[in-house]
Length: 143
Image (tube, rainbow, N blue to C red):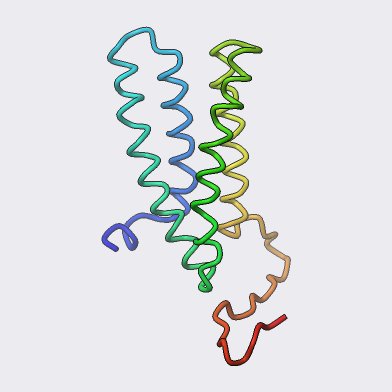
């Protein structure tokens, strides 16, 4: 709650993935132990901080909680596919390809955040009204 009014959600959603990708690239290409340490200490902090803000943004947009319920599954999907994709990249192209893979994943994630924050709307385009997210169980689902 402390940072909610002080730090823009958009800033976190668009800046931290870039910081994360830069730190992964730094860690993968570091020739000095000090540079590797900087990358390794920054990555977990940026991931935890970003995930908290993503949870907050999702909870503001979807009051039903369905998106929040699916979010841990997406994290686990990334945890399951990451070693497979990373191993394939390393075996096929070498360790330098991991930085390219992280950059590609960052771009894909930022497009998702762009849609999440509504920045993809054209200025002259009418916004679609969202139906109420909370549904009373007695009323049944609204289709």
